[in-house]
Image 1 (tube, rainbow, N blue to C red):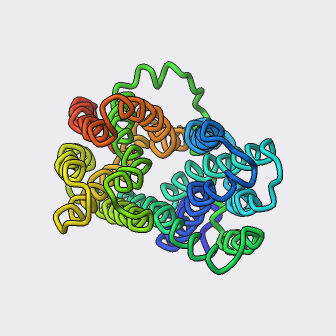
Image 2 (cartoon, helix red, strand yellow):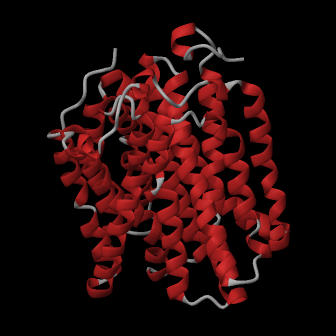
Length: 397
């Protein structure tokens, strides 16, 4: 059990168990979040959804799951919401697993919006509690485990849902709520909720939006991560379509998407470890600068050739290698507002990436999807340049 009087890093209480449990929660959170792409082809004819309405549905999920994260983080920095850890995963599970019972378009949009809210609430909460329970010297590694859990859940969701629906029907989806409720039960007994989301500094600090606008470190880091996410989200969104238009089957396209997402998981794990060892800013710059090479190679040679598969895996790894270090960086740059900082790195940056992806799609209508995706990879050296000129904050005492 964890200490109920002070953060684990100060009391010598167990730390790894907290990180692993929160990583499992992140796995489930992102697992449930990624049901929609697989379920959409099934519910579209059932509810008579047009492509326009389907795109609007995806946008609603993106807004509630990404853009609202800094808002949740801001509230958690000022009010202790650690007990929200218990119901937040089951809430998201109940929402998305009820989709097979939905009979109207309005109900569908409400359910998807609520699913996104559970994601927005969990991400800053989970990363804040990781920071509270991990040793200072292991912040990068602990964040990498936490991020890897989410990446793995997101990557495995399509495979698991396809296999599940081959064996069962949409009306049986509520059975998949069970892991979410088991996680809540474990959290209830873990003692993690005894750690406050509010730091001593935050209790005496008044937040002003101008602090962010005048914080060169956090502003330039957000720009760098937003530029990175344009490439990342574009790859995640359009990789299957790119492969299908190149003559590959839908099943093979889905498999290659999983390969890319597994690469993201490995990169997140490796990047956090290297950040602790060699400095977080160096890892961010190196990962962003190097990512363009395998990404551009795959866009020029999409397919299943060995070098293309290696490039796809490395693209995912390098695109996510910077994320754990960006979390450590952001939390140091915003002392007393760690939850909001986490919301920016895990939510706002991906929201910005989603808007950039819309521009890539529009460009694809004009010059072709392959060419548009290749051009989107040019955001990576721009992101590296932004990171170079962003001052890295001194470590907190």
